Image 1: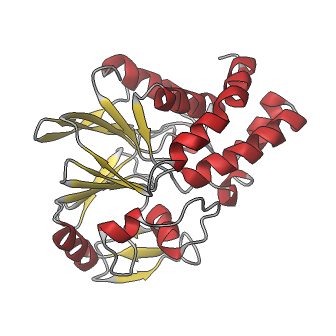
Image 2: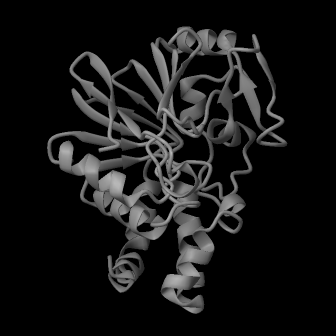
Amino acid sequence: MDPLVIKEFLKENLNRIYDEFSTHESLLRITTSKAIIIGDLHGDFDTLLRVMDRFSPDKWTYIMLGDYVDRGEHQIETLYLALKLFLEHRAILLRGNHESPLTNYEYGFYMELLRKFSPRDGDSIYDRLKDVFSQMPISAVLNDKYFLVHGGLPINNVSIDSIAKLPKPDEIPSNEITFQLLWNDPSDDVKYYEQNIIRGPGTYVFGPVLTENFLNNSGLKMVIRGHEYTPQGYKWNHGNKVLTIFTSRAGPYNGTKPHMVLIDGGSLSIIDVSS
């Protein structure tokens, strides 16, 4: 894609996108009989195009779990297409931990903006994108059955209603519950939770007891999340109560088999979108 087209789109639409995100709480409630759930893309423009070709966004509700940028070869193009689908009301976008200046300066997105848009334009567009990221919703409840989030469950006993009231805008984010929703990972090796030594301070791995308590208290059946690289494109934890989905083979993930989740009526399928 022509970077000039993308640059003009962002200049013309980021204020509108910010305003639309700002009208939503941190938790969305979605009801649809036909949904496509897309995990981390990390600049994998080709896989997103392949999903759209196989499952038209005119016929399916797209729900994206975040991490549109950083690491991959086509970060700007991928973010552009996701935002375009959002503006056309053909996709629902959740925030990932890579929609943050905490990662964008280190993992490539900021530098890609400078390289493709010029330093001055890239810097000014990123300043506005930081605002946009800070207003993105953090999570969603789908069909009163599935809890959708980028990372995982917080270690505190939080309710769906309290997640909905989490403060926005929150750039880093600085709220510890929001931060954990974007950064935490499930583990079958702990009962409750432990610090996540791989991801660093403020992050945790959460065990099956936390998952069971959260789902029981919320009246939900399953957590569907992204965030965690898995070479086969998906994995189960906590007795099939937590499903991780990964939809990128860009950059360092070129050996991955990207997958997505398809909700059709009452059934859930995990779909290989590698070809």
